[in-house]
Length: 397
Image 1 (cartoon, helix red, strand yellow):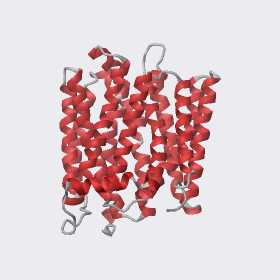
Image 2 (tube, rainbow, N blue to C red):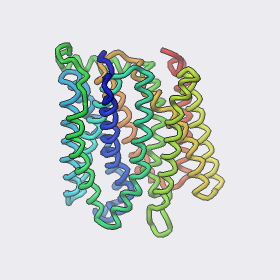
Image 3 (spheres, rainbow, N blue to C red):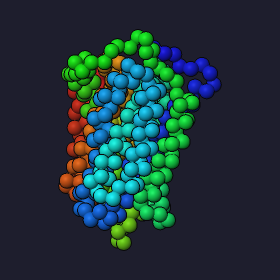
Image 4 (tube, rainbow, N blue to C red):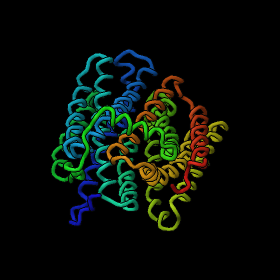
């Protein structure tokens, strides 16, 4: 395994990857307040507008299954840089498309390119650093990249005050263009290409079949995805659940800032908690916190308490999620032994599919009430807890 850089500049690659994540996730979160505008601009239904969020994740899920193994064979740098360039081009396309069908195609391409670049970068992080350091770095990255869902809606709403909603895609393209140069300069190569194995469709199929049949890995991955489902459904339904009397998104913007601040609190607890307790215990207690938080959210919604109160108790769930997800991601990877690019691609693809399904379900049922969201979230976290405490769950591998 390549060793972590010893120069003082070792932090530059994680920093560049943080910035890339922020820009890529802004292409989802900054776009959310524009959903009602997109609905009006293209003359489509609410569910069709929400599908423009779901298709972003669908494309990302499919392409990673190829780009992960390709980066194992050809190296991380080139594959990641190609993804960033693709993100820039597809962002420009999103701003230019006049028909909704072509706009959806551009959103698929944007999700493909952005997430493949991030997943390749994460493979590099988990190759460069041992477990505790990688978890600490990922927790720090999560606390920074959550600024996208925290500030993205506010930034998107602000941009729409001075420019058409298409202007946000121009801004994203500009940010991606700057990151091409930054990544080219700061990203180390973590793959020894002289020792990598040749690619074959049969070999890839066998490896992915082995990952699918890896019950301990799939069990923990199911826990991760179920918790993430709650977060994704909140993001896509929030602009409609918290729409103001004037139809504006300001209520959702402030609620999202609060929820993401709660998530950051959880990520800052990761390192001290792991210093005091075994990782399985930290994971179990943080999942319990998620359960209490989403349960309280449902109770508050059923009692018809004011929306700010419901949002406040939802923050408890977000603290638990912030504490849970970074160490759980590493635990999922440790349950398998394939090349790191393939492992991260598999996990990241599953997460992208989960995000797409959550968005699709929210669009299909047109979730627009906090009670419906709370019930959906509680069922998801209860299922996650059952998986976590099963025989294949959080016990050390």
